[in-house]
Picture 1 (spheres, rainbow, N blue to C red):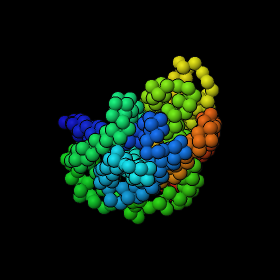
Picture 2: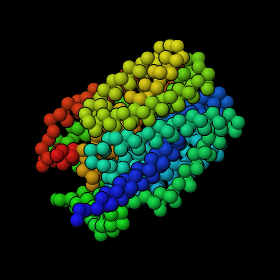
Picture 3: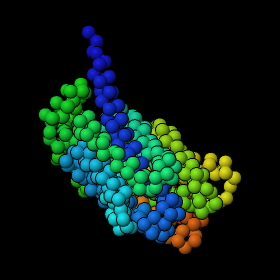
Picture 4: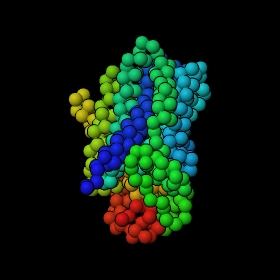
Length: 438
């Protein structure tokens, strides 16, 4: 008798369940991250909390500094205590922190709220990427991660509409109250999200892994050979892996400087170019729609041609697009450039994460992605601050040029990583184990 395809179907349903739950969590992550940039023009116009352009850049950097802390800690913590627990904690943290922003009576309290939200936001993303990587169909790792990251940009689109529909009639505080709603999703995650099978096996909890696998009729991953793994940062530097690790970190720095610099200041920079608030927020929508399209296109292309190569090409195209935004163009052409810039920029950075996730051993995947994201957060901190300083000095046009140069630097670093990746290490070598060579 032929074997039944039912277990494969049930395994597929498990993958869909994990991706759907993680997608929803990342949607809320994107909403919380982008909402500040979407309401910032209104806050500056109304002089809310007495915020100046320079302080606005600082506040944007507070959130990204929190994300730096969250990302650096989350990978190691997730590989030690479990990815499910950490995802739940992160969603709860950034939701409650948004409530603190909503009731803030001064810049200091608001900044504290954004910093705490950033810790939750920074911890969620690498953990969710690691979760969906565990359950991704073979040969579709980059596409699955790209699909997950469409949620981040869907959240960005949602933030623009929150600014249009909520802020004007109710004020800026209402937008942050909307960002408290994800707290209701915490019980859903606690009940429905399974723990990572590879985490359970790597931590020696094989009986729990077998029980979970039996529940969904899937095969648990094999136990790792050699010493137990799980969240050791030194694994990223053993053998020749340190070169690739540093290249990914440097590329991530430039990429996140670009992503968060543009995300924070795009509406304000466009208003400084003479566009109305409605048009400026339309740019946010187009930018994030481009991000959704780009994630799906880049994911498929990366699974075929290699994520580092696609990331390098995408960063080069991003640099060109961002630079063009400093040139006054007809509105329709500007809309097109913003959309295409969103296509390339957002997915270029995500394909760095895809590369690291796919090439890392499952036992320390969250550590590798978390530290790549975390080191990149230094750029995410610097980007919003840089934009604020340029605007405060009445040199807003230089903002697009500075961000374009960051794109060029990421092109160089991830391009070198792509060239080095063309000579794959032996599967038995330390570097081969870390990069997933096979």
